[in-house]
Amino acid sequence: MKGLVVFSTLALARPSSAFVAPRAIVGATGAERTENGVFLAETVVGASYEGPGKINSSIDLDSPKVVNNESVTCGKKGVYCRCWQSKTFPACDGSHMNHNEATGDNVGPLIVVAKAAVEDAETKREAVTDAGGSESVAFEKNPASIVASLWGMGGVLLILLDAFRRTLPGAMVPFRDGTFTPAQWLAYGAAVAVFTYGQGVKCLSCKLAPLVVKRSCLLTDYKKGQRTLINTLLAPVYAMGLISANKSRLIKSHSLVWGTTALQVALHRGWVLRNTGALLNIVNGGFCAGFGWGATSLAILSMKSILAGKTPEIDAGFSE
Image: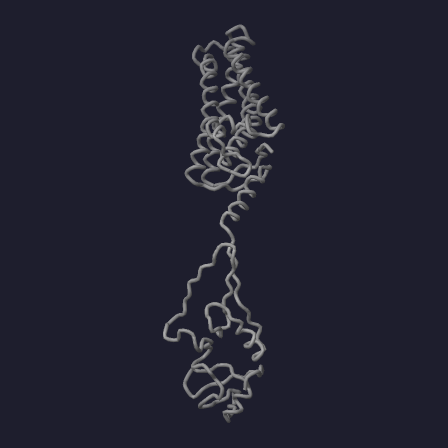
């Protein structure tokens, strides 16, 4: 009776025991069709199983559930049976070919190939570092990466806070002495607005802070040699793109950092504005507002990136 693929529904005399069987087998039992088209029979000729839908007729029948645990050596492959006919179960011995020929089925084995974990890690690493472009990328959050990230971002934050601290006394003079005229207060407000937008928002918040956070978060990446002793020790300097960066990033970072630092020091020492009067206080007020905005933006962006495990969208400027 094997090899027939025309099926009819067959119900045994036992309650709730309907299953599919070849029409020829039904005919061999002398079963009769009922009004609803169901065949009734006491026995089924050629049935090798004992119940509805049973496919395992020989393997570990005493167990309530057949479970196999297999290990595949790295770089090797395992071929496993899915037809339940293999004499070497769970390994495939090719019995599915006879099964398919006899039944018209198309069953085949399960093939498992074990790849080295280092390959997966390398692929992930390439995805992270090669995304040194402007897109946001995920980074692995582990103790080493978090400590390195906090050192890089925290160091830059301390630099900005120190600049804020240096300009704060001069910025507070008009509030302490109360000697400003309305015109001077207007100039003071304009300076605060201009420096907050130009230095704080456009320069520090939109450019420096995302750069610092992204480079800090990817400091533990091995692909392009970012995690080196010098980069780790000088993480704040590295995070600002002053070292281990491509030529374009080095020029931009050095111009931004040293230009801003030189101007701030010059103002603090009175080299540019030699008088210590209202004009110096107005400029200090602007710088103070810009540094304060930049430091706040960096702190918020740092925490958001660490909690989310993703970097900001900015070109990190990694060295090639």
